[in-house]
Image 1 (cartoon, helix red, strand yellow):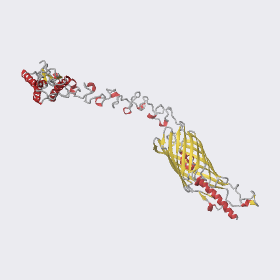
Image 2 (image 1 turned 180 degrees about the horizontal axis):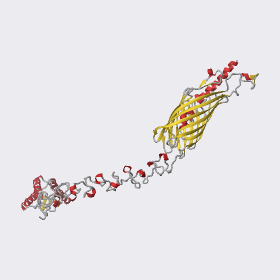
Image 3 (image 1 turned 180 degrees about the vertical axis):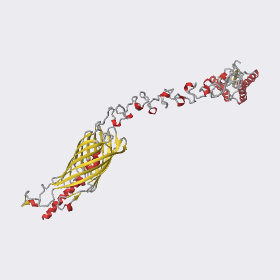
Image 4 (image 1 turned 60 degrees about the vertical axis):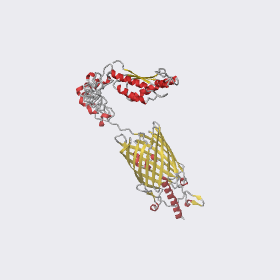
Length: 618
């Protein structure tokens, strides 16, 4: 019976140990505040001295309450070129207590080192390496344990021993961890991107409270932990950063969710929500400033499987931190550039000129500036090119106007090879012989003085031609192909014989009557009108007066309109044949008959058009 009781007690002890190990596998839900339990490379992710306190409480598989306080300190060192520390050392002390019997206490020492491997937008991308060693002491408190050996006649006698054989109440283990951590953080220290992987219990330590420990030892297996996050949205006041964690010991745990942060001028408030494959959800609220932070989370079991051990688990983290500034460097001229990087350590200057003065602020240090008091260009050793034509002012004859090297910086606007100052026509290309002015028609009269720049002409007529040689330039000649007189605008006078012919034509036209109440030209009139067109071809100065008439039949107003339409019909015929002479058209209606309207013959004569020619002064 004694041996049986011994094994019962041993089984209870091992069950407590295994249960606590399984509970410990969850670590803290807010793993980003516990780098010692997540990834030792994270110890160097921030350029700040830190002192952090964490506390978590949850139910263990044994039914006991699992309480975990933790305190950590991180000290960065090895300053880089950008004033951020490349490395950090951290120490953490943790205590796990399950109910009244089992207490696990220990400490961890971490060392991490960062190197910059690239850029993620405007932020440097760092790769961190971390290593960690830990010492843990597990103590089994048997004071609360009662066995049959302590019970006599139904009375508990605490002076009696347990009656069981144990190796001792305490077992010690040493464990090692290492990790890699890619990360990029913004100017406020919040993550833009991170990706990390770590291994804990690399040496897979064992522990046992029993005398035959090798047979009953519990081995702590390798625990793998991977985390990742990426900020998918950032506005002036708001950001969203989804994250994921995968952890594996006896089984794989996946936790996924996101941070939602509201950014104030000197702080930010974050709300986080995650779900893990144990069927539990975590909600978190945090407040972050550059000098301190506070965060609270709560786990809520969502399935029957985890109601007993991951339900109603509160967790809190508090911390203070101090961002480290760059170490003091010698700067004798006080220009903010360390002497070791200052090309002129005794003269205050600018970063753009490597610490050397630049009096004219042109980006060229005075020591290299040929024109130190006038802003200029580096390619001209600090001397100006005011007009931006690529010729420095001291060699530019026209420093205020962009020009070309051929003319020492002076312009040739029309590109004719003559600089504007010597070009009589600077906006229009022309030959040297005419001082840059064009003569498009080659008549010896420059376009600017030529009334007819596209047609070769005579200087006497300002570059215009006189085709008929009548002394009147074509541009002013109404009959440019027929020699005429100035009185007739360059047209020839009409001979008496031609006038007689025209007179006969007009009389004959008068005899060609229009149909009753119609305005169309009588086809019998066509040959007469065609002859008139031919006779007047070279006499555009002759004015043609066309008057329409009707008989007395119909209303007077109707006849007035009809007579005008008859005159217009004759005008249109002449225009269609190319006559450009001035024409005067009117309608007299029935008011001017040339025959009695009492007979059909008389009325037919009155349905007429009279054509009168005005030859003007010849």
